[in-house]
Length: 200
Image 1 (cartoon, helix red, strand yellow):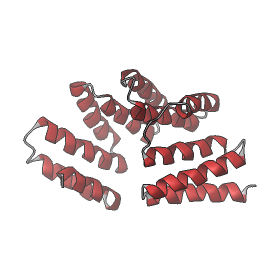
Image 2: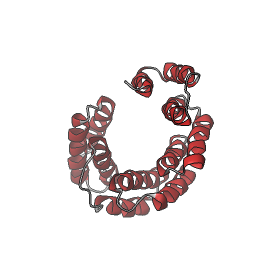
Image 3: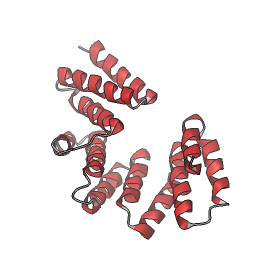
């Protein structure tokens, strides 16, 4: 088992302990690659602990050194988590320009974030516009969590304007999150579905 897997496993139960474990593992890390891998996992714990500036520093540092668009994506994720939505949108736009043309999975995750951030900020027209681009993205393979997120977002976008579309989307989302064994996400979407049914 990779050492970072232990950090990720501990994250759900205790971000504090995951952070402590990462700091301990960093002391014995010998290569920059090992340090980046441990810090990457640690940054998730820092976000859970609302230590946003330190998480930003980690992922920004990795991006500045490697120019890996996935690290820039994580910078956007921290801004979104800290509710700095205009900055998150700006960063996700920058990332999209760096994603290789044939990397459909990364494009899907990026478009999800762009649409979701516009939804959160209340720019519904733009959120729908980006979602259409996301929906029409030609995908040859699907990630179960990404598909669960896709349908959850579709439900969120349509819950005020077309409850039937939203209900179907949430039901599809639950199916994919069930396949992915993401219990927390399942509970979140079930709550959304319950609210839709109650407000009919």
